[in-house]
Amino acid sequence: QVTLRESGPALVKPTQTLTLTCTFSGFSLNTFGMCVSWIRQPPGKALEWLARIDWDDDTYYSTSLKTRLTISKVTSENKVVLKMTNMDPVDTATYFCARVQMVAGSPLFDSWGQGALVTVSS
Amino acid sequence: DIQMTQSPPSLSASVGDRVTITCQASQDIVNYLNWFQQKPGKAPKLLIYDASNLQTGVPSRFSGSGSGTHFTFTISSLQPEDIATYYCQQYDDRPMYTFGQGTKLEIK
Image 1 (cartoon, chains in turn cyan, purple):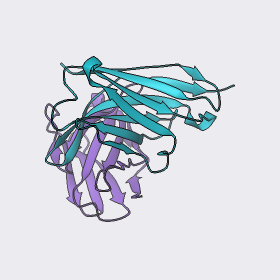
Image 2 (image 1 turned 90 degrees about the vertical axis):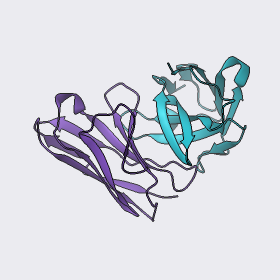
Image 3 (image 1 turned 90 degrees about the horizontal axis):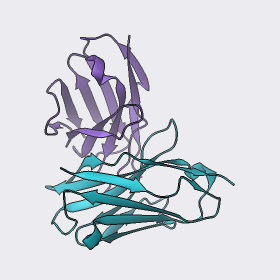
Image 4 (image 1 turned 60 degrees about the vertical axis):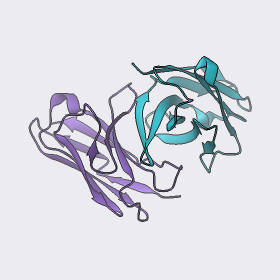
């Protein structure tokens, strides 16, 4: 059974750096075609894809946020970490991590964590 | 970046109705499109990938079609548990996986 769980601070101050951890089980990020993505959703708004890290350590970022994001993995601990710098109140959102299986080049976002609400406020 | 426009933004239908949601891409995305269902307070769930392929375990009343810039998501017979917001997502512009703005489906 595949599970993912997001953890991190519920409240951060403007200009601070947010660090979120996705702890997963039921699959290995060493397996060909396995990836983990981060997606966020401001309250009452649409989903926004943020970043992806692949089994081969390749990383990809949203073009609008790439200067602020860093995604990394600790394969031995089944964890993926997302760092977002210079947080602003507009970054208030629920942050989800998801397993992405690359199947014939298509990304299957087939398992998701429950999400972690992060509020940015002084 | 590719923009995805969903319509309608919200929809009210009766149990048993056929429901259709459309998604328009700002440029040709071939068939590189996912459809997700998100129930209130929950994570999204993948229903359709490659525009028309049903994800494992998803009921057959859900279907998708289209290619190029115009895509359709259909529920053949609406059930009470289908109340949710539905999102399309393109992955032609890899890996900028742009989502649509969502369609909120309610029971009439």
